[in-house]
Amino acid sequence: MKPTVTGILETVLYVDDVGRALAFYENLFCFKSLFATERAAGLDVAGRQVLLLFEKKSMLEPAVSKRGTIPPHDGDGHLHMAFAIPADALEAWEKRLAARKIPVTARYQWPRGGQSLYFEDPDGHVIELVTPGCWKTY
Image 1 (tube, rainbow, N blue to C red):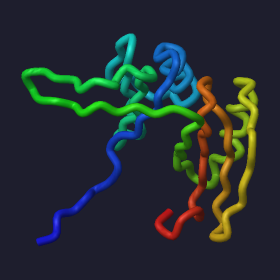
Image 2 (image 1 turned 30 degrees about the vertical axis):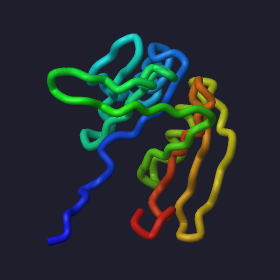
Image 3 (image 1 turned 90 degrees about the horizontal axis):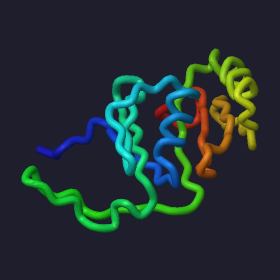
Image 4 (image 1 turned 60 degrees about the vertical axis):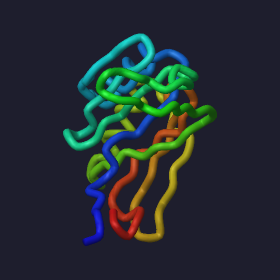
């Protein structure tokens, strides 16, 4: 029997200031915090995924405890991630971004009919809001 994957559980963004990033995602998306420390935070995304925020370079060594080991990982640069939104929510998101003075940096119309809005978080990561019709699977 072939083993299966049921989805992507976690996505990580590496940030300069965990508190600032946490406040941004909590305020804009109303994500609930699962945990928060000076160097890491986790946010519940739609009850199905977790957005992890790690301070840059804080995970360069393995995290070893009696429960096991988490291998080192890190990232730098302008990373990208996309959040799925309903098609009828696009205008509301445009207004929400504008109300928070977050500029939309790009827009894209996908061949299957989906639409994307792009903006940056405080660390310069490229965040996308995308409606159905982007991918064959969405």
